[in-house]
Image 1 (cartoon, rainbow, N blue to C red):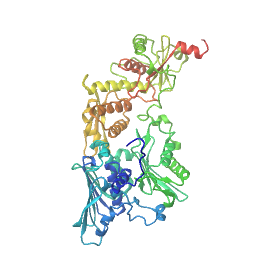
Image 2: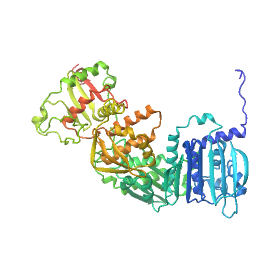
Image 3: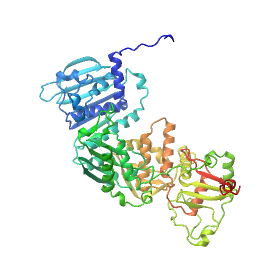
Image 4: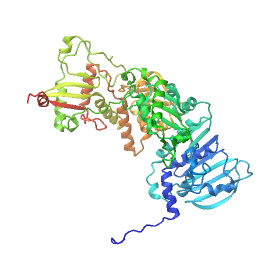
Length: 607
C-alpha cells in the first residue's frame, strides 16, 4: 500500500468474524472438550464418553445421554449468540448453568469439520448436521438414542497459523485429561469414560461422594491426607477437601476451585488459600484443595471471560475471609506445628541469599572457583567436634543405605570456641573460613548441583546407574492420569536414577527401591513431585531429559531447615567442588557467597 494512502475502515465478512470469535473461545483441543462437556452436563447427561486422537487435533468426539437437540433446532445450535440458557440481558446475572454465551458450537464449527447427531426426548428419530469451516453441508434424519454426539475433526484446518502453535499430542492430551478431571470431581454422580488413540485414560463409575471421586482421580494416598472443611456465613457457603500441612505438592495442579459448581480461576480464592496455609507449610509448596463456593447467582459475574474460566466476585472481601477461616478451622491450621515440622520432604529454599553482585559467587571468575577448590581440598583438616565421627565411605548424601543421625551441635563453651571447618546457620547455610575471607554456602542449592551432575552422568551411562537402596517395606502409590503417563514415558530414566518401580495395575505403582543418594523420600512425595513436573513439561528428548534431571535434583536435595552434622557438611562441600560447575545450582541460583577480608574490614570501618 502506498505510504500516502491510509487504510480505510471496513466491515469484516462473516467468515472472518467467526474465526476471530472462535480464537477467543477455542484456544486448543482442550477448549473443544470443555465446551462440549459443559453443554452435555447442562443437558442433564449422566453418561459421558470422550474419544480423542492425536491429542484432539485429528478427532474429538463427545457422546452423552442428555435431553438432546430437536431436529428443527439443529441449525440454530451452530448460530452465534443462539442459546437456550438465557432470553434477555436481565437473565445474564442469574445464570446457573455452565454456558450461556451462545458461541461455543459456532466457534468450534468455524475452525473445524464438525458433525452433530442428536435426538431430543419425545422425538421418534434423531437428526444429523454437518458443517465445514462454519458452512452448512448437510442436514438429515439419523437414528440415535436420546442424547447427543458431537464429532470434531481437523481442528484449525482453515487457520494454519493457529494450528502450528499447538503443543505435541502428548501435551494436548494432558490438557484434555485435566479438563475431564476437573469436571469429574464436581460431578461424581456422572459416568465418565475418556479414551485416547483407542486406549482408556479414565474410566470412572458413578460414586456417591466427593472423597470417592477424589480417590479415583488423585489416588488413595492423597485422599488419606485430605480433611473436610466447610463454613456458611451471610448467604455464602464454602466446603470441600484440603490437605493437611504434612501433605503438599510442588505446584498448584491439584488445586480445584468451583463457584456454583462451575470450575473457575479466582485470584481472590487463591490468595485466601495461600494465606490460610502461609504459616504452616514451607515456601514453594502448595496444598491439595478441592473447594466449592456457593454464592447467590446475582453476586457473581460469570461473563468476564470468553471461555468462562474466570469470574468476578461482587463480594470479594467476604469470600476471602470465608475461605481463609473455613480452611484454618476445618484443618486446625492455627494449631499446626511449626513450619519445620512440615518441611521434611517438602519445601524448597526460600530463595537465593541476598548480596551485592561482587558477593554473589555466580559472578566470580573461574580462577576463583579453582582457588576455592584448592582451599577445600587442602584446608579442611580442623578437628571434629565431640560426638562427630568420620563418615564411612559412601555415606552422607549418597552411596550407603544407612544415614548418620542428625545431632544438635555440642553445647559446651570449649567446643563452641574450638576452631571448626564448618558451622550451620539457621539450618540453611554453611559457614566456613577460607584464606582471606569467609564463604557462606546454601546447602539446598549446593546439593542440587551435586545431584544434578551425578544424575546427568547416570543417564549418559558414563558411570552406570545410580545405586538403589531397597526399601524394607515397598510403597504403593496411586497416581493421577498425568502422573502415570509421565511414569511410563520416563520409566527407564527413573530406573537409571536409582528408582526401583513396578506397575501395580491401573494407575498405581509399587516403589521397591529409591536412589541411595536420596535425602528426602517422605513416603513418596518426592517421586510424586517429580512426576508432576514431568507431566507439565513437554519438549524434545534433550529438553525432557534436562527437565527430569532438574526436577530430581531439586526434590531430592537436602532442604532449608534441615540440621546437618559436621561430617555431612564436610561431605557436601567436598562433593560440590568436585563438580564441574560448583558456583551455581541447575536453576542458575548461586551456591555460595564469598566475603573477602577487605569486604569485612570495610563494613567494620577498618578501611
